[in-house]
Image 1 (cartoon, rainbow, N blue to C red):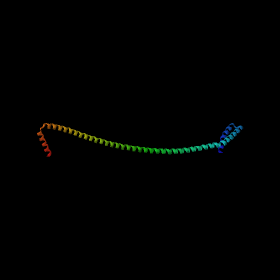
Image 2 (cartoon, rainbow, N blue to C red):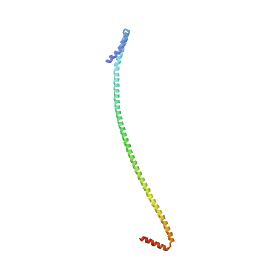
Image 3 (tube, rainbow, N blue to C red):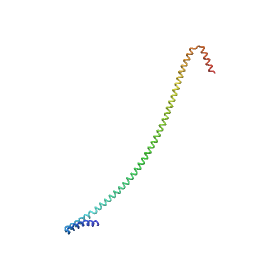
Length: 179
């Protein structure tokens, strides 16, 4: 009702001011004003509820949208927080995996170095054994050659000495063995 009086007041005030300029109110103007007021009242009567309902529904829609956006915002913040926690956890796990693999790699490196040292020692030992073997073989070959040459030389001497000298050498040899 206040709205109706406010509307009528707003419409009639300018008309009253317009009419006062001419000095009198035109009778046709009065009927026009009355027609306009009745038209405005009828429109107001029929349009008031749909407009009020529209604005109420719009207000509710906006309110619901705002509440829904607040819920979505809270869910998004919650998801963001969870995602950040997961990322932090992933970073920790990644660091732990890197540290684990680094320590495993270091242990593997140490094992490889130990195995290489052992292999080098085996190779050195093998080379040393081979060297000793070859040296002994060379000594034996040298001894065999020397023996053969000595035998050959003894044979030559024995062939050049006579039987009496031969008997004398055998006696000396037997005496030297028996002592």
